[in-house]
Length: 124
Image (cartoon, rainbow, N blue to C red; front, side, top):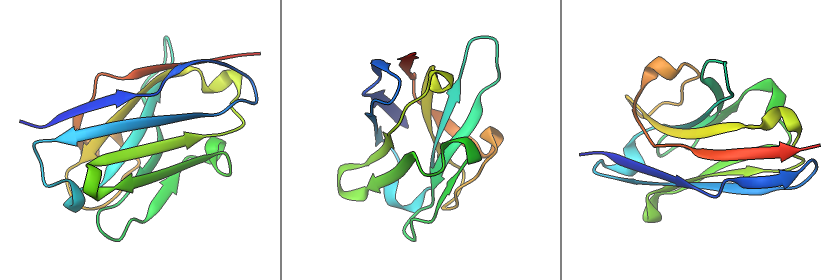
């Protein structure tokens, strides 16, 4: 059984930083792509960043490029999202997911397992 557990969310001010973590179990971690998505109230879950398996290719949505960095530590079965220069519009529940292959995808439909989410709130 695959399980994903996110942590690291919180309430911060605009311009602050946070690092989210997601620990995975139940799957050969290093062979799968991993993604971070977020969902604000009343909105659909949207893509934030993803990282592929062993090659570790990364992709980002335009609004976070230059501010967020996704990385993974396969020895710890953990994927991270370093978020700098946070803005109020980054406020959302952040979810990590495992993709259906070793690739990184932008569509949430290409991910088959999800964590429970961690709340990030950025005040102005």
